[in-house]
Length: 374
Image (cartoon, rainbow, N blue to C red; front, side, top):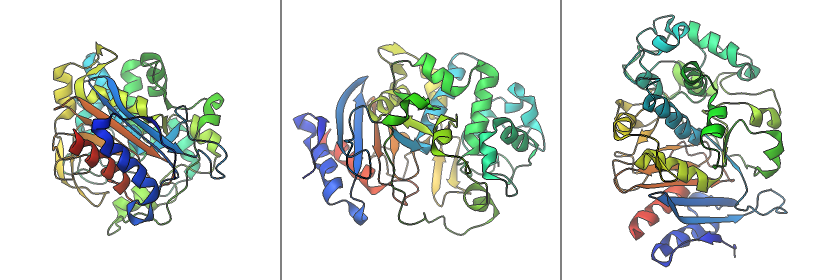
């Protein structure tokens, strides 16, 4: 029997039951090694459950202080940080990126708007030719190549998920108008949250070990766009150790987080508020939530509706029954979601990764149990 820690009110007991079931009878054999599921409503944590071991040898318990790599789930934090620039009048979703970052406007990208960039419409899901994977540790080299590169499809005509590149593009846009990196702004503007874009070496001992998926994800038919995004040499960072990976600031890919603080942060998307203070106005929330494009994605094998950096639940049904919910998933199964209709937000992190690109069945089970109990 797995020992479950944390809090869950009796009225939401079905959530705790689903959490326990993920350790003993999860679908497709994806039994948890360690996981945490946290839910926030109107700024208050109402569910916070964790269990398991932080290491493969099962010598170190997964605790309320353990950090988990959440990979692309961090894109929700990235999108929210961009929204804080919109709130402050530093950015306008409808203006071209080149207004703020002239170099980006090369090779036919001069009209790409901030909203199009954030909704994966700019046509830069990867490099147009194979590169050394170590390039990702040279931020300026990545930016120079992407600025000079022509879009892989006409911008604004389709979305095509940008697994890694969007972090460099959105991160540089943020830096151009704010003056700080996203990692620095996250630490300075939200100092009470245990969320890290660029993890100091002093915190590495708190990071849980991940077990990689037993099989590769199903990308559907592979073409040049999907190869550039996921399969070409250099489509993802490599050639350096895990310590250097953790310390790098890659907002699209290497957020390290606790689920409870990730759920709190996602409350900004749900309500605009955090710790009793309004951070995002209703106008900014409307702009952040608005669907910018919907249809078959050029990279992920799904029909998706993209807001300004977040997936709209719509007909996906991976973030509960409400179409209005927004969220994002990360490699291996983690996710974050925000429901603006009832001021609800939540986050799921785990250590056993699955091959599901979005909608890991363990997370779906938890979110469905939550909504059924509400």
